[in-house]
Image (cartoon, rainbow, N blue to C red; front, side, top):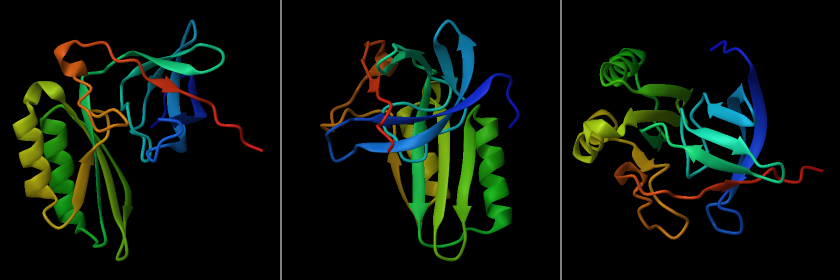
Length: 167
């Protein structure tokens, strides 16, 4: 993907919890300290593709949700290319985006962001039917304690993203 004003920043979420990870995240600089997430994070929780984050100088904060529910699908088996193509087409038909990170005989990692407007049940059915031999998890619907964030109901939820100290 070639995006104007693309930058990569290493960010960290859910600091001081077991969900704390750091990852190089691809962003589009929108100007005025705002960035749009342009690739689905593979390890980080709390945000996903299309979300807008703001640089607050000492950290980043989630400014606006994109309306996508992120899912991380993983397993230990390769999925055939023809099946992946069918899944990718289904994601596009539903208005979603995907990233196929790894698909080999030892590991499978697929990232998908589907519009919340299609409904929880449809997202669950999609993941269960397309990835029956894999595990999957939501990436931006729970806080570090496992509670629903409920951003899809218009509830404002603060999310702090930090720049890890990299020595």
